Amino acid sequence: MKFFPPRARQVLRHPGAFAWQTLKAFRANQGLLLAGAVAYYALLSIVPLLILIVVALSHVIDQGDLLATLGRYLEWLVPGQSSAIVRELANFLAHRELVGWVLLATMLFFSSLAFTVLENAMSVIFTHRVAIRRRHFLVSAVLPYLYILSLGVGLLLVTLVAGGLQAVGQERVDLLGRSWSLRGLSGALLYLLGLAGEIFVLTSVYLVMPVGRLRLSHALIGGITAALLWELTRHALLWYFATLSQVSVVYGSLTTAIVVLLSLELAATLLLLGAQVISEYERLEAGRVEIAGSVDGFSTL
Image (cartoon, rainbow, N blue to C red; front, top):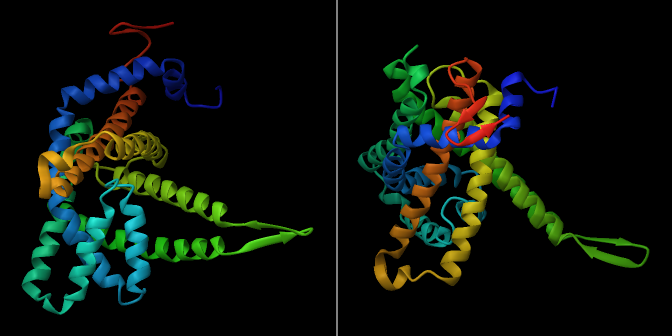
């Protein structure tokens, strides 16, 4: 533990106190309300954003491979509902000739809404940064579109790598008269690729969205925290929808929208909670907060 910075050692010695302090700050910042706003605008943004990315990439990648990869990784964001979104994307691609300049401009506008609201939510959590310096409004205006472009490039790379890993899964290794399929290895590598991509995207959000320059190590702390919490939540959602949920009985044809909104609400909550972890850690380093001593019932020796 001596190799860690002093504040990191303090957190590792008293993780319960730091977690409680982070949750208190998240509640004081009305994190759930902010997450609801981010989730609502993400619901408006996700379809036009995916349409823009898929239309652009379908010129360089086979449409079937692209949609298959997109569907696989949408399961990380909207568990159990990726097939419905992919069907709508495929239907849109079948009529892409109807896309005019007005529709394109509309999709660009709506696809950027979630980023704008997320930036405002981050400014509430990182209020100590906003008080010191503010971002120029032109940077805030251009940032969502640069991020959309980056997501498109990332999806291109992930599609190429995933195709290679799937090809590996079709191979077999023959040694000393015995044969082993690489299908299990391929599946494990695809899962690790998805998890690494999830951490990378979250880390990039924490690097870009808050005002000012964030240390990569701090962004990684938030990215890993949010990714691991989302993995637990995602598997819980998959189990719930598969075994206990009666949401289709209650909401009928609105089921997909309700489930996607619920998934986005939980994802946005964990995204902002990861940001709050970074914010509290920064405040520790700045000496504004101490978790030594007793913090609301947590005895720290």
